[in-house]
Image 1: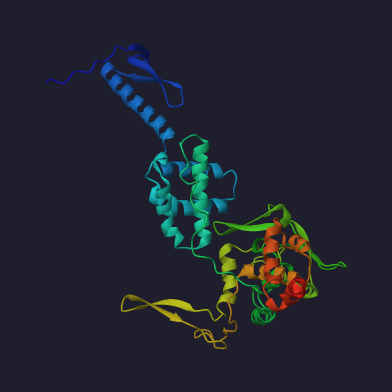
Image 2: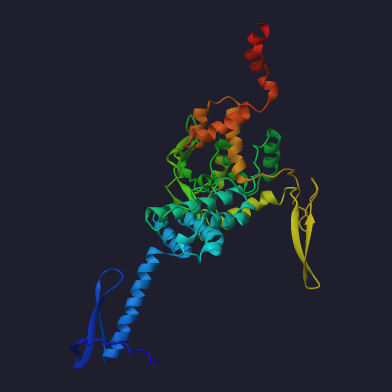
Length: 403
């Protein structure tokens, strides 16, 4: 059977720069009228058909984006609301745990089971990462639902709990604090550690602290928190945008920190309390190197890789307390516990509560916007020692036992 010949319409003509063209008009995907030109009707007909197919495809893709396409759009929308560092974290997690397993699927085809399967590998990682990825899933699909791209939201029933429980870091004991300070005395992290232990500043607050916010020669010495540090592409960025409104506060400081900061100020060449050799705020990698002074002096188990006959051999070393590093005898393993920068702040808050400072005052000093954070720490301190609760329990049940 002979193939039916397509009927090519007769188009109108226009003359442009002395040449006659056939012309037709169509509407693009945005509803805008556009003109198409060709030297022959057949050529113009092919152009018209191809243009219409492209318009239909664009309209279909807008109404039926893939997961990868909508994730890209969602990230673009967030770029006006969140910091560059937050957006970078969203992008990395989204690409690794959402786009990688589901990016090829149309958004409207994704089911709750697809999301649960995508979360299986994440559930084997930390609870924090699981919650972040789960949050991203919900944000994407709720946004698509509000834009009427979905008939139903497949993420609605996904559990917010999952991942390996994070190992909770306890506050440092008085003995551990003394051990830590003796270890780092005279080393680069000393001032940072003192600020964390005795003013409770967050890392981003301590690294942004300038001398114009440190008041040592007043009847009540204090630190004023007005700036925050963050890293973008490893470069430090200092801004007046704090974590929350409650983060802006004035913190009275004890004499030991006053003395420490007074000595640091004498030797300082920078407007920043903690600075590099050129007087500039620390970059992310510079802070990591500063904290390394603490890590290398701990007895934490270490894993190394060594090449033997072209093969990478993994081996583990557990330092002995009081021993020295093989390649640098000046480094003594004097910390028989692990410590993180955030533990310094946690220790400060815990000590305030333990010594009877009321939770509302602690909330202010810590810069907590939500009292629940403070009260969770308070409850843990107040109610975790049975011997201290004995009198309360006896008093509560005394009337019952005597009746």
